[in-house]
Image (cartoon, rainbow, N blue to C red; front, side, top):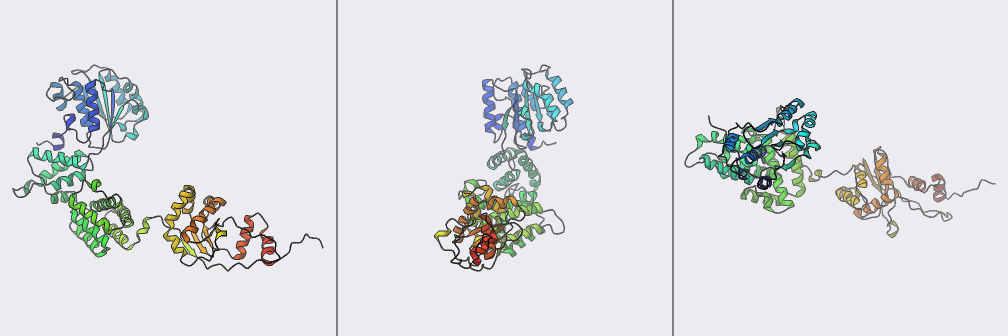
Length: 543
């Protein structure tokens, strides 16, 4: 029976480990200088070489060749390669995670190696150990016998107790770049004697998402799928075959779909989704490809450097650069957000393609500004009646309410026009960002809780619902003045701020505004209004 490719081509020396040079170089130097630690923690995604590196380290420690690299010829290296080395103990912590399992391990640690210099314990998925098992392992892990070495491997290092982490040297294995996976797959294909298209190799490498084991397993699967199609004129593994196995669609189809978005052609986009469904393609894979393609467009728009797209073919990069000019940044961001949501909504059913179709229509028909935080609902009230002039006999000085703009005295105010609400809506994000810069994040967050907004006369009323905290933040005199200045700059006219509770914002009448201002000054509002507006005189109560 043929051996699986991922087992046949498993790394046997440090030089054969792909994409983890920061780990292998450090281990080689430690072996050369005789400074190998008693315990290592190998952390990283699955299929990136953690267990293979641990076995290579075990061979290097016991190799009779006295070299940093294992020779793979001596009896010890051969025994490890064939899986019959008694002094190499591999433990699956997922199924041996109890405290009794660790106690058994601890009891056996004291025995000398049976046939080699070092006894190596490789504990895979070590994060699965129970809390009691970790506690039982601590002392042995900290001070093992001189002939024992531990290698702990995990995909979830955040679940390892700090007491264990502090007793190990930690190495983080990284996801392997697409180019390095593709180069390794090409080498394996050449050694195995079958042909494969370069585009197919890159498609396999991208689908593996940094996992070499997944990539080699898929290549192994493709050798069986494409064996009957191999001819002198056609390679054994083609891009079309890889796409069919993965359930993905051609790059040209994804590009055409994004072209439909840029051209706002709903009909063309819906037709592409319909054709995909008829051909039996994977909707999830298609959505993922669309998101990845739009991400490329976003990178071109934001950075403008194709270096970030080194995993893409040259013709794909040209397509991305062209589409980056056809789409605005806001449209691209909104499309990525909406199709990401649609991907999570794909659950099959009678119309499985419906989430994608809805996302397409919303991206094309909707406003790109929907991606930004929406401005609160705003009510345009009728301008308040002009305030009647004060009586000459009144000696009360004109009062400036706490909600007035500091620059109000420098420029005569005029009623806000009917387009003020639209201007404020269009500049709402700029307004919030300016508030954050000048006032602070707390004030910006408070303004985001506004439930309603009304504009009239020279005032802007803000309703905060029942949230007394955010109302208090904005109604504080200094903050209110600063917010009023920022609003005045955006609207092109001095305005005052009125903070209100409730769900609906209203512009007070002239009398109501006078009462409100008098209350802010700590005076009797009715008395002040009677004196300033009605011409009443204050009596001391004596006849």
